Length: 307
Image (tube, rainbow, N blue to C red; front, side, top):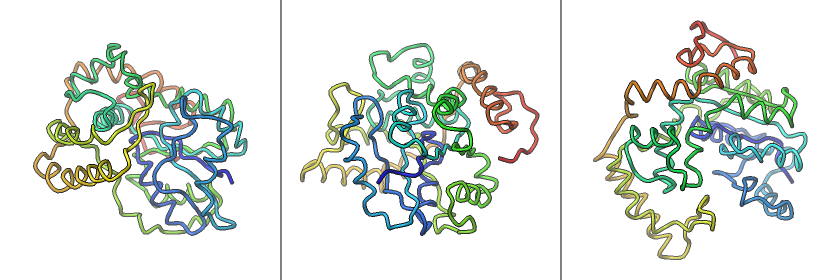
């Protein structure tokens, strides 16, 4: 069995909230968490059966889906998805790309894919072409080029097979947005999920907290040969360290080192805005709606627009 739909992105834009609300629906089955399979260095057409086994618990008649928000930004993935699932429905939820880049930057530090530095220093390095020796550093910015990525998916899937949501719209009308998503997937659109009032995961914006986290977490990761992906170490030592580190982070570091999203210098903010400006305008055209909520990127008149 292969999925009927994929949440392909965007990373750090609310896909975990969608997973919870979709998993609550009795007509939908989704495995918990994410399944990494279709990206470079992980993909093998001969092993598609290994991917299918994740969906064996689905009941007859359930709509089957999977969440993997990295896929929106990987150029190779639309063709691979279409090769195995030509009738797949694509779901994307998007967040203001500068806000998403900041959150993604902290996420990549927490997972060990970037050195721990302030957002002002690290994002400037990525923007200026630094960190070239780090395999996935470029993703922090490139994953926010939504117009480019969605146009590429449109080369393999008809527009009516692609459902795009905005995190801004979810904040203002979550019930209506979820109803529209349920309708797109062909399930009861009036269902109210238990997870409706849950909140998406927050990025750990404290540099000090990240340093304490990394001191233990680095011993819990096993990296692939190309340095792009890691797995959590199993066995009693790896498992115990992971449990201990999660507990310390939740009970101590999160409370001792609270932090809000960092304020960037005006120069860096302007450069990031310029980086995304043209793509945001293309996205606005592709969606056929005003992105007034991103007016700093598009110059759109701030009026309400329905999805």
